[in-house]
Length: 416
Ligand code: 5AD
Ligand code: SF4
Image (tube, rainbow, N blue to C red; front, side, top):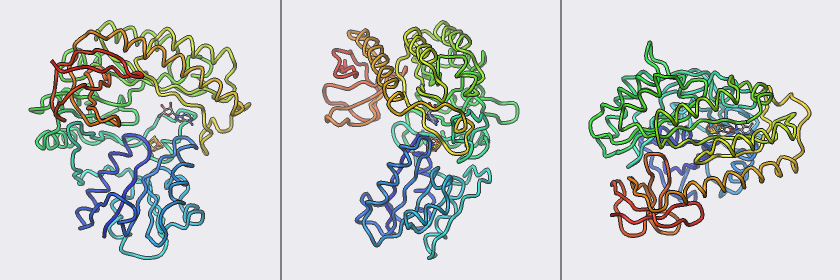
């Protein structure tokens, strides 16, 4: 069968897209790059905010008629059979059920499979993406932050065995990967027996030929001395951490069940910057959480101003069914949330621009990843700065680049 696969959502979902590709490939099906040429259309969906769901549903409604359609992923898990009614699709499969795909696409009639049975897909060998490949090391999450749907749609946290992660990385590097991005919803809670994230990083770092290691997403409560030590000592571990703050107000952090105070977060950032000079720190922020007052919101602005993140993903709070926060009142109006988000984005953008402008004239190491929309090549520095290249370079190679100017927020440089 020829199938088309569209992926919404986070890196975890991208990785799952490659799992799906491997499962269907092994059963003899081939992926095509347009829905029109496909017999079967698969959409791997996200549920993290309502907007992500609306977009996926809009896309599904626009699909060419007369084809088999399957909804996969987090929205599939959340709505199950209701999606069959609402969108008239043929099947709905949650994140732990992809191994059933080959059988399901051969049978007719609507099918729903949404067991969350702790699947880790250890026997599936996805093809690496070059030069930067993702490797999932954990699935699910046990933190139950009060706003977050993830534990409900992806189940409880479980880790892949350390050996299995190292094997997957080794295979990817054997096929040409230069950088690996290790993935977990809360990767700082990775566990295999006595080994935690720090030990996993140590073991991955000895894979021959691997030049760079990154990992996502770190929970502030899980960043310990051991992890900082390993990041400091091992050269191939990129000096970059994605460390979602979510809010600058202790009252809101408590309601979010984040398990740290703003003071603890400041201390952690100070320690990271002291121990790992030049570390890039990126974050996630939510505005308009239920009950958020102007003072709470201003605490977030103040934190952003003082912490000077290199980059931030910023969101307005979105009610998610089943989560605790869905029951918190009062809610903020949509206009209030939009106003707060706009002002926050303006502030962080200024900081990002200032920080990037400050690097003009410096030399950095860039791994070229792909071509950008303007046709020029794009790559990343170890501390996660995205750099556009003036001139001809080769994807998958490292260059010393002198940064020369800023376009938008992106530094542009020439290889030397
Ligand atoms: N509303 C808004 N943003 C959310 N996020 C998670 N759940 C919600 C929600 N209900 C954001 C958090 C998280 C990122 C992946 O998405 O900032 O870190
Ligand atoms: Fe990823 Fe969460 Fe969206 Fe699922 S709901 S795709 S885990 S961001």
